[in-house]
Image 1 (cartoon, rainbow, N blue to C red):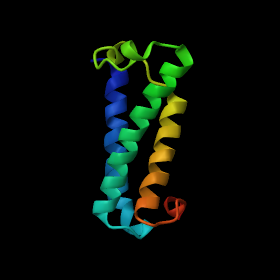
Image 2 (image 1 turned 180 degrees about the vertical axis):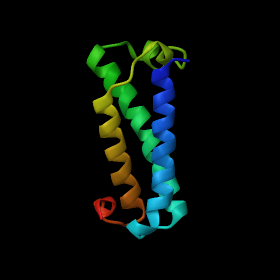
Image 3 (image 1 turned 90 degrees about the horizontal axis):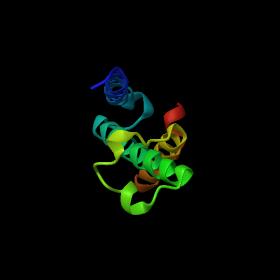
Amino acid sequence: MNFYNLFIAAGNAVFLLGMTLRSPKMRISRQHGLALALFCLFTALVGARITYVLIHKIPWGEAMSPWSAHRGGFSFIGAILGASGGLIIFARSLRLPAVFCGS
């Protein structure tokens, strides 16, 4: 394990902790805050991988192999797009405005 992976794991832990602590200020329950954080992390990973595959024109059979992602293959922009999409999907499923995180 290299330091890059350690920093990614630490960032995810800080994000999860921050969402659970800040969720009452956003007028949602802690359970919804944790669910939102986990859902956004998942959609960020999916978005990062799909964007990388599309940018680098990797064949889908090789790209979706669980053993190929360890060689690299995540896009930062795709992670932002995936997490943003996850936020919108989560907010719509709870009938919340998508901008509730800004308050």
